[in-house]
Amino acid sequence: MLNATVTIEAPQNEATLSYGPGSPERRRISAALSELRGQEMEIPLIIGGREVRTGRTAACTVPHDHRHRLAVYHLAGPKETAMAVEAARDAAAAWTSMAWADRLAIFLKAADLIAGSRRMRINAATMLGQGKNVYQAEIEAACESADFLRFYCWNATRLFGLQPISSAGVWNQMEYRPLEGFVFAISPFNFTALGVNLAAAPALLGNTVIWKPASSAVYSAYHLMRIFHEAGLPDGVIN
Figure (cartoon, rainbow, N blue to C red):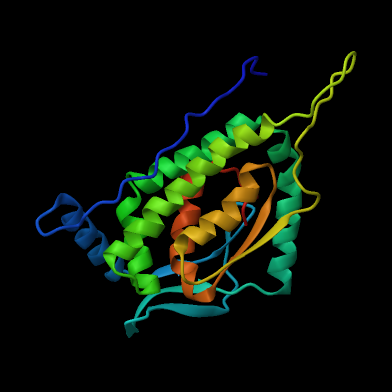
């Protein structure tokens, strides 16, 4: 156990890139768009960290080019839903008992990946899958997603510091515990960052999550899930 009070510096909003003609970021986003447009992915369900394929599929298409298929994704039914519930419950004890600073470290790492080495990929996935231009994707898919995670982690440390006043001879303490069961997160189609918001916010406070993104935002959501796992998120925490 760490005998220290963990602090996080107050974050600053992630600076947006300009993508002006001839800029390095314009070349990088063009390359990322070409790479993703040039391949058709198969997107499985992610349950307990495992890839689950049901054989019942639907397509991710480009909204401004309906004939261009980016991916096929597998659909969940009652069986897979029950599997996800079980996986969330199985992961809960270890995740809840993990030191809160270690949980926050995972999501701070995810923020660094979104703002850094995975920035162009998540922007390109949002542009292709949800029909946004580069400026819209940069503002929300990259910058807002990273900001959400960083500010949530910072605010978590402030939340844990809120303690009741004690009278003489008494030491009152409040323990912040996750919810019983799991959180069911349903994110909308229009903002990639809202998937980060609704799935990651309860998870970093110790809850396990079943995440159902909008069918028209599965493509970017899958790329986010890969980032979460790259950052070290344990299996079953977000399904």
